[in-house]
Image (tube, rainbow, N blue to C red; front, side):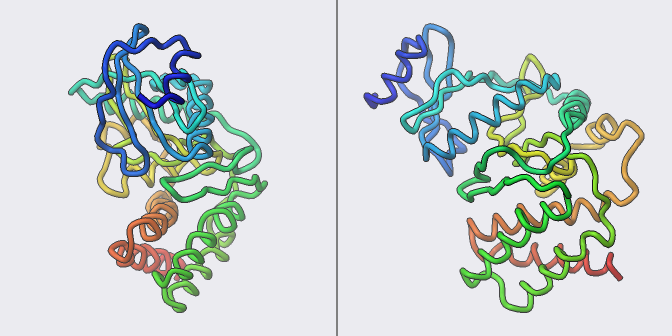
Length: 279
C-alpha cells in the first residue's frame, strides 16, 4: 500500500482488514475498495484539485438533506479521497429517486455557480458565480467548451458560429430563475440503488437550472416514467424538450472534447433542434 494512503487511513482511524480491490468505472481516476475495521471504503486516487472538488460536492449534497444517499467523506489529501462504500441492491426505486432529486433541487440560491471550481470528468469546470442563469450557461459552460473543441479541430468555424448564436440568444426564450443545487454530472452511472434508498456519487456540484441534471439523466437513456412523475409532481415546464436539448449541449461538448469526433454528430443534432425551436 502507498505510504501516503496508509497515512491518510491511519489519521482517519481506518485500520485495513484486507487488500485493495480495483473497481470498474475508474476511467478518470484509480478507484479501489477496501475493508477496514470501520467497514468497507472506496478509495480514489487522482489529481488533488479534482478530488478536493469532489469532496466539497459530496459534503454539499449531504448537507442538503434531500433523502438521497450520499457517501460520507472519511479522509482526503495527498491525492487520495476515501469515502464510505455503498452496498447496491437490484431493486430500482425510481419514484424515490425522483422525489429525492426534486428535494435536492429545492435548495436554491440567488447566484448561478459555486464558490470554487471543480471538474466534470477531466475537464476543468469554471464556476465563478453570475447573477443571471443565461449568462452563466453562456459564459461558463457553452462558449468555453465550444471554443476548446474548436481549438482542437473538433468543431469547424461554421459549427462554432452556430453554437455562439445559440449561446447569445438564450435571453430570447429562456427565463432567468433562482439557481438550484445541482449534482452536475448526473448520468446513470452516478446513480446507485441501495438498501437505504437511491444514492448519488461522483458530483461536479454547482447551482444552476435544475434541468441540467435531468438533461444529463436522459442523454444516454431515461430514468423512466415513474421518476418523472415523482420529480415533476404535476408541474413539468411546457418547454422541457427545448431545455433538455439546450442543457445536453454542455455534456455533449465535454464528451467531444474528452473522447473525440464520435460525438460531433450528436452536437450537430442538438444544434439543429435548437435552431428549429428558434424559428
